[in-house]
Length: 355
Image 1 (spheres, helix red, strand yellow):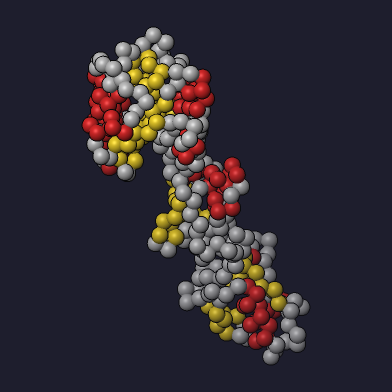
Image 2 (cartoon, rainbow, N blue to C red; image 1 turned 180 degrees about the vertical axis):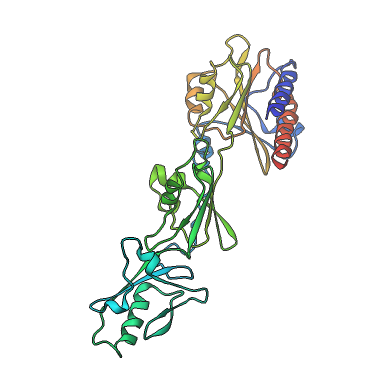
């Protein structure tokens, strides 16, 4: 990132040395000297609302199979079975033995042994189903048997929580649905650098993006799904989300968005505004890279109406704001000189991310 910013500052500094006369507002005929993947857009009342990017958090994915939750028994689970009025069929827990220690463990083949009945299939069944079968089988030996079946130890199913949480861990699933926010809280909660808007859940060989932040801030149910057996939750660290402000402003700098919305007018005001002597208020440019190329937005702030318009233009991470100087440069010279610098920043950052 330091190399990127250094290169950008050098590029912008060289650009500022050009003299000439700017052609404002930008006209289509003036764009002939630029590459085809460069688009110039002059911001005005007619189009400002179409560039609202307030929701820049990761897209919300609805995980499949989250309509409800029913726990089914699996190998390793321990069952506690109580037959009322028949203590000989119940393994009682003592002062030194818990129900989990005296219960019936489900074996690797998914069954457990029970007196008079023999091997009972348990895997993939709810406790109520096992209870119904035992009642039917024991009816041959006991008149109207009354049975309670519950899970004394949940060992067969779990989900894992990793990444930017206080205590990454494996959490057992029980008869109570385990939702994402509960799993994160059980893991000690999010760390200060966690990015709750881009939580990833791996399920059945696929990775889903879940916006936990949308649930925490707005109660969006899709942001707090029920976890399933073998789910792996990964909470990433929040990457720096900066915009860069250069040119004829009082305090050129990079501004960390920190997940918050920031408008063009706010960014200019935060850094002391335009240089009253050298800046040309007609030449405020925002460079934005995307897959389709580079979009250059032009905003005139020579009047209060321009600054008011700038309050509707929300900045995106990676935006480069540049204010031209006076005497004015030709606008296309400005853009042509800035584009290689902006492009180089993107190339270096992409290379750095791949290391």
